[in-house]
Image 1: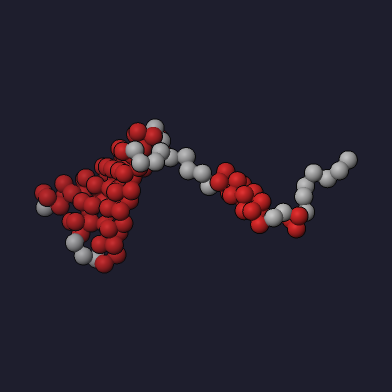
Image 2: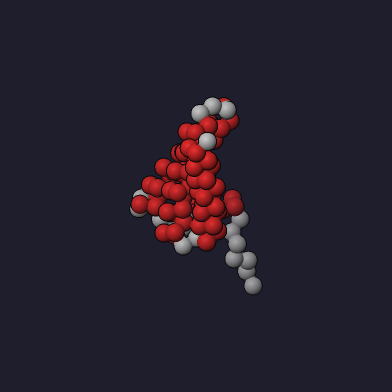
Length: 109
């Protein structure tokens, strides 16, 4: 019975490229929707959360940090609900609730 695997040296450059492309595209193929509303909201929310983290690390604008964090979590909660991803729904519901309570506390004191 002959070995069906080819020696790497028997491939042309184009064949190697095609084989590598075929194998890697299977591994890193995205499973999330692209360019629909959830795609835009998840990226916008991620950028907003990153801005909040920057403010937090600088130790300035605490109120804006909390507001941006809350906004980002609500955006991700929207995405999680649309994707029906329970772990993201739980995480962002809890985070948004805690941040909302913090904002209410800031307003009342």
